[in-house]
Image (cartoon, rainbow, N blue to C red; front, side, top):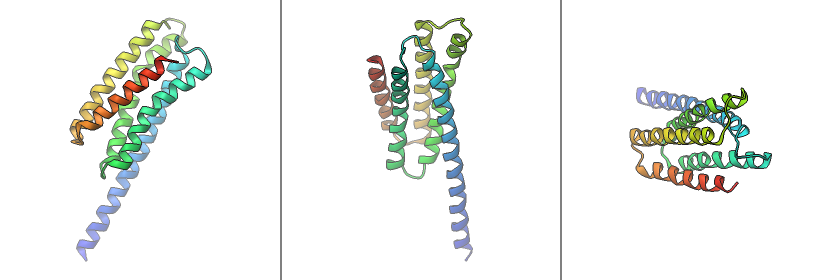
Length: 160
C-alpha cells in the first residue's frame, strides 16, 4: 500500500511540476513575443505592416518548430526543455530592448544598431541553447536543428 501511495504522490508531483514548467514557458514566450514586436516595429528595415507581421511570424516559427518537435519526440524532459528554451527566447528578446528604447526616444534607430542588436541577441541565444542541450543531455541534434531553423528564418527574413 505504501508503494502505491508513493507512486501516486510522485505522479502528482510530476504533474504539478509539468504544469509549472508549461505556465512558465508560456509566460516567457509571450513576453519575448511582445518585446520582439516592438523591436520589429521600430526597425529601419521593415517598413510596411505586412513586412513586420511576416518578420515576427518567421521569428516565432523557429521556436514553434522546436516546441512541436519536443512535444512529439522528447521524453518527460520535454516540459523542462520547453521552459528552458522559453527563457532563452526571452533573454534574446531582452537584448533587443536598448534598440527599441533608443528608437522610441528618437536617439538612435539606424540600421547598424538594429543589425548589431540582432547579432548580439542571436549569438547569446546560440550559446545558451547549446549549453541547455548539453546540460540536459538530449543530443546535439536539438542544437543543430535549432541552428538550421535559425538559418532558414534569417534567409526568409532577408527577402522581406
